[in-house]
Length: 298
Length: 208
Image (cartoon, rainbow over all chains, first blue to last red; front, side, top):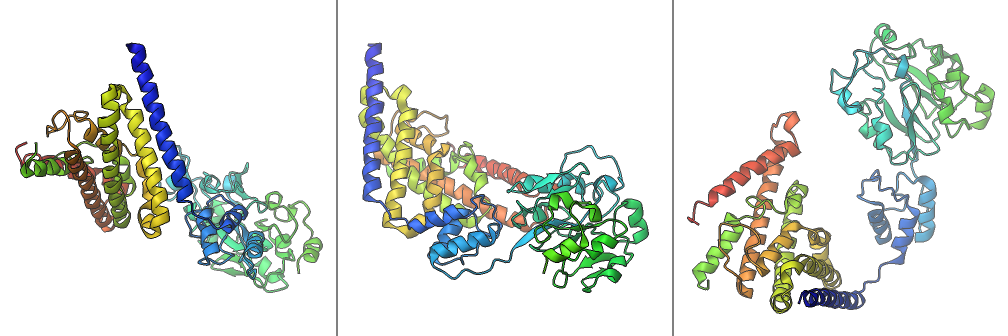
């Protein structure tokens, strides 16, 4: 009797499974829809990390949009020029230039920044930013709990021994997620700049220089040495902070050499110097020579 | 249980008094998941009405003509019903995609989500073999197909009604001056609790 019941159950469930699978496989053939093979091909070219920097929910949705013509071939912000070119070839469309950007960090604080209080809470910048504006005295500097590191979908940011997030330009795609995640990103601590930006000022403070020097030993002191030394009038002290006009900057590296605080760094791609190795080193960065940089950049 | 009045009572009992979301607390994931936006809630509600009705019909047929006569239903109903509901939704999705792309776009994304929804399984089970859940209304030993359909319609419309009410409330709460610590999900939980209290209160109306 019991065996009978087991047998019945097995037969009933298998029969049910067989019937449903038969119905489903018939339906799959009957209701088959030709999907444009180009969608798959475009999706294969896209990075596939669904970072959302372009404003679309997923890379696949972008692929569908590009194939249907609703989105331009250079929609992928993170993929940059090579992805846009690949898709343009596939779609037979004119390739167009992608406004390629990378992320920069405008702070050299980390261990050099004076602490306002001892923080023992959740290790997150968003959390510490809510406690009296952060655990460091400087109101513009990096909070140092690595929200950007956690947020980066490309693994391009790591915390170094100074407690600062170092951006690897070889991996950075300029998606801008770190800028959005950083509680001080809106204030310019992390920012997107054009890809070939050759130098970066590692300070973002606009308050009084006196108080700023007490808060951090490596801040911009608004001494204007860089402004006077710059041969192409590209760097100016605006609102007590050296600001670079990347339209004019030629990447000669003079400002890096003259900065007494070592708070201007050579930056990445165009210079041929690793952004990780140069971070925080100023004129001591490996491979840094004014002439070398000068020759590498037009 | 056959007069029009009794059927109406069954419907109202399933929709309001034993509201699946707010008094039985089944299917809470979409209740919090999609209720942030009225439009998506509407799509979800329509999809639930559609899928629940189909699923209940299918499970009722399989229960009445296969599982019950074989005497294996008592212990086989959950795997059997899951199998039926999952393949049914798959089938509907394929069919809809081919026949009505517009409807597919409006409802399609919610269909695979509903496949694994406990509310659908609960309702389909209850329609096929009453007595699974303790409820204020007595469904009797078994339902006819018509009664099962009315019951399912009641449950799914109750689901949609609660979901739409809740999402409308949440949209208003977005612009309300809620204290910062309570903004978002915490406030949604409190609202859901109050709404649930209101629905429990309905149970007194009909003296059931």
